[in-house]
Image 1 (cartoon, rainbow, N blue to C red):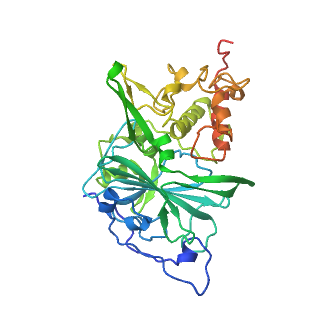
Image 2: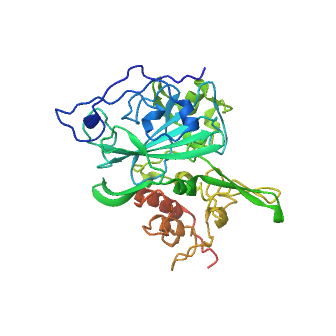
Image 3: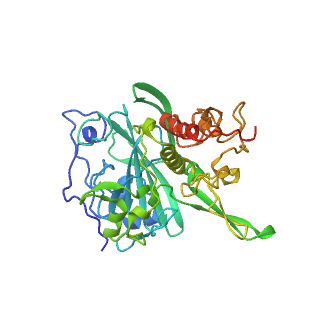
Length: 407
């Protein structure tokens, strides 16, 4: 059986104090407890107006803990940067079904699967953790994005949390608002953007070329980005204890085909804003930087050439020649990683190559990562610059043996 273990206690919280808003002694309503059964039929068929209609969590006001039966948390070794927000991720797999292991791509999830990610903004990034049992102090939940695998493919649904934080409402057209966060003692003001459906496609859409010559056509499909084996191969705390995520899925009967020896999986190393780069060797910096570029950039910067000349799973920027998947070895594929490669859609004085080995200041990749204009990279999904990410990629480039790149 593939029933996921979970806590049996259904807790209650007050609507305003527990769910993030201001409370008063005279206004202490209870946060609604949902049924313990996920509404699988609704997930497959409709775009619910309210997040709570899917019955995903024990408490409708707290999507950061306690998924209902069929759900379990997941986390990545290195996460995609979104304006220093915290992310709470859960997988929901229907009863009597399972995902299939993939060496390089996202796990092959069965129809009915929902990948649920909630974004919370801290006042100060030094204080993480959403607390639904007390008045807001550390983080404020902003949105919950759901990717649902339906019969005709994956769809994305963005839910924005209501002002009282009791529930979240579907916002197909997205939403933007001004806010701020304190990071390492510095206040950063920015525009937080909840993406609309078309914006989601910019990152999540892959294309295939079908046919040849005049008969060739492009077929697109919407796909998840994060839950690949190389990003999931790490320990996480479950209701049953701390366990490797892939091993947990196998044990629960919701993953098939994975290697028995998980150490054989080419795993992206853990990177966070607190990672000390000064103690890393050149090879360690390479692994960390390639992992960071994989999760933040490779969904667009990917292209697989096949023997018949067609393309398989081409990302939005696959045409650029910059291919940043972690599994692609640097040695022998230097140009694909940007080394001494002239960018085809960007120019900046004194910055001639995507990567100029030994000189990050003359390299396009960290330069565009640091931009706050329309030419920034990634183009969508963030408003702030990820300082630590820029530092990592720059440190990797600076650690490379110096080359003249033919100049």
